Length: 342
Image 1 (tube, rainbow, N blue to C red):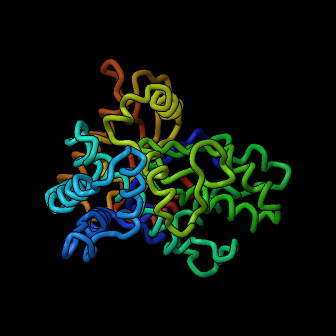
Image 2 (image 1 turned 90 degrees about the vertical axis):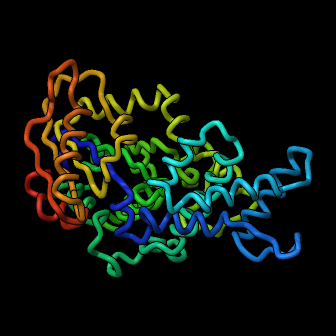
């Protein structure tokens, strides 16, 4: 169990460990799905068919019939993906174009739901095989969480830990609930109720709530993609512009960061846009800082460290104490620093 107040900042590199797309992989997948073209105006020869079906539903609800303007917006996104830092950056640039934003969200939702379904932690028939992929950070985190914990301690197991994930997937919530159920030999309902106590912030939204989470549009982890529910799920995605306007969520997230005694960055790229969201307005607690910088050049590592320190500086006072950054994957990092973190 974590003894100090701890916030994990999770990026795409962390979800990569369980098979979710990262960087160019996600951009390429979105481009493929949104490059919607028809041979003769009727026979679709590229792009995602379920997205096209979803577009017909969307246009029909608007009282129209022509999906071509939306398809054109999809092709605009597809052609620009090789140029974009990320899909998030591109949608931020074109935040005032409703059709581009809609198509981008549909592409994101379709890609992430499919990736969850094929991920290493997708539970087959409700049962997760923990022996198949033991060397993932989610498993190591849960082992750290459960160290020295007895059944009577379960209600407080998440008291000192929270997550900020910039990923659209629900890997953390999904895995933790299954892990608790199997390790502590408790019911699925009990494990899910416990996991509801784990604070997980999704600044850019997520591809629906898991069915047991309640609130908003729900979709099971690994559920087959449906063109009918895809627009609703896409509606849960938020652009940077939209998220900046959500003061309540950001205030609560930043309060957790401000009160943390240690912050751990896992698979995070330290992008400027995301660091802006993490910048705290007030603070009274000095923090230990840990982070992965796998495959980052020394100049970029230095810049990333500077961005982290800037995000934790209030009125000229820097609230970062110990600083440890390592060129390691998320799982390796947690194993290497286990004794320092719990």
